[in-house]
Length: 347
Image 1: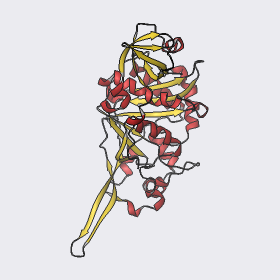
Image 2 (image 1 turned 45 degrees about the vertical axis):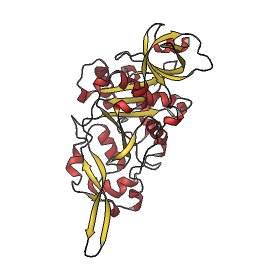
Image 3 (image 1 turned 60 degrees about the vertical axis):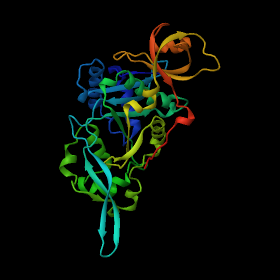
Image 4 (image 1 turned 60 degrees about the horizontal axis):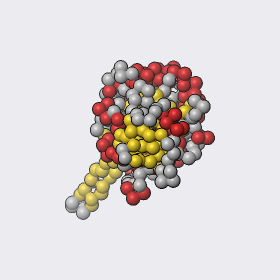
């Protein structure tokens, strides 16, 4: 498997992936025209023809036969061209000293606090390919790209995780809150944001603090939670240092997690090494390996070992990267040592 920039001829496979993802993946709408526009814009991004506010680094994962099996992305900065809203989970204290009553009331505030930050987004892997290290490669490959081109991104990175919904696409959070203001099904609102129509959020969403005890119990219970199909992606990001710091999606209540770019494990621990081709011995471990190119980016995962400033990989790994011995690569172990994995709050 390799991860590389998206191309126009990937469009049919992307559309199939989008349709199989269902509701909740707002950055990958199953809309041919919108997807074609996004692919074209991603190509301009990799050609360094756009500003950070418009940068959309869209990658695909392809197998050795060239078949697209997954998609993943990085946004240079959110909210600098279109509105970007989240709820911040907060607390309001209701107090009556005379009655000796002090009650902290959980609240939701509509905010634009995350505008300008870079975002990891659009992660989706075909169901039959959710095996081995494929998911880890697809998710973590973006961090080597971040490490190599840090100047193109912000000092903090966010990820909006898909919130809880049932098999029919019904969201308890939306049913308890959003639909009362928008008067439309969750899937429709989700689709509209996915194709870039976000102005209606500002026009219809209340600007005052929302007291969560007034919401139905089903809605309260999913604030800051993630869809069961997103739990594995959440754990991967947590293992890299991401944590939930109180922001949630305004539609499905899903957690927004974040991390300082320099503190992401794969960014912090990656190093530049000289590629050597050989036979990694039994002491080899799986590495993420990046050819360090912008327009011709190629990232893969394979057994390797570090020896005297060189990264020894197998011939097949070098072939996947399209590189020869003596070239410089950026690499990092695929997984953090067990003792350094930091699992933080997720709700």
